Amino acid sequence: MKKQHQIQVSIGSNQGNRLENLSSAIVFIHEQVASVVKVSKVYETPSWGFESDSFYNAVLTLHTYKTAPKILSQLLKIEKQMGRVRTQGKGYEARIIDLDIITYDEEIITTDTLQIPHPQMQHRNFVLLPLKEVQPDWFHPTLKKTLQELLAETTDTSECKVIHTLVSPVEKLGLQQYNYIAIEGNIGAGKTTLATKIAEDCNAKLVLERFADNPFLPKFYKDQNRYAFPLEMSFLADRYQQLTDDLAQFDLFKDFIVADYHIFKSLIFAKVTLQEDEFRLYKTMFDIIHRETAKPDLYIYLYQSTERLLANIKKRGRSYEQEIPADYLEKINRGYLDYIKTQTNLNVLVIDVSDLDFVKRQEDYVFLLAKIQEKLQQV
Image (cartoon, rainbow, N blue to C red):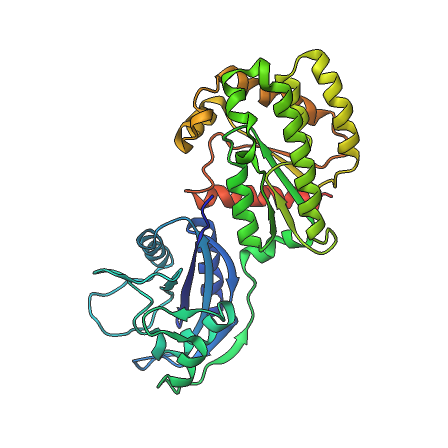
């Protein structure tokens, strides 16, 4: 799964309740555009380039898979939503909200409507100072200078005074106070995508299943009866070894860990694929391993309709998955849901994501995060 883009956005206001304007804009951006993972302190600064009331300014760090032009379009919509009317003139003016993309990864973008890095950022303390807070190691790709160097060389002598501290929406969720979340789902449900996204947004340790290394998987999809037992046994051994090794690297009392599978995934698939006598032998081994495996604070099962699963499988294009039959996926879903019902000692959250797209629609991702937060608070 590819990493999300990291974007720095400058946010400012000098009309009305300036702090409330910034807070509202942050919420709108997080709910409609991209995950707001960091917020700098709020600086009060004199108006730049014209005579007016002083501004409140900050810089946000966003995570998203969206393109820079898409982000710009959505930020302009939020400005309009909050009542800003951009005039056709080139002069500066007072504004209820001002949203500018400062950086987009390490990219250099020059179009008629967008220039990244922002062409005036090196001349503005109200951008450089809060940017240094949220992205201290950022390096200007065209000027070839660090933020420290830009601050030392800027001709802007205006005073920027810290007047408030805001907390990002991601930090407010408080997921980092927990230790271990496991996200599960059927083949193509999006568990790896969601686990990766949450880990990146929350600065968590990520544990991903090593499915691609299993030599029996392509053979299994061609001849299930012959290769089911060696496949499931090799998966069980590998999952146990990986969980043991990976979790041992982290402090289960201090680190926040997000995994895209849990060990009892092995039992679900084995129940569907193995013959009865094979399954009895398998379960004996599984029960021994399961007792020694760390239990997550929250186990999340992403339920996805079979139609969507098949579409997702086709889209990601793994050749050995293309002939998976619908009834096999339905058996896996039933196996998960039936087994989950028996887990009285496991904190379980089942979410139907059949009509959600948490990659393209930020509001769907925010909905999932709210569900996860609500369930964790019940622990």
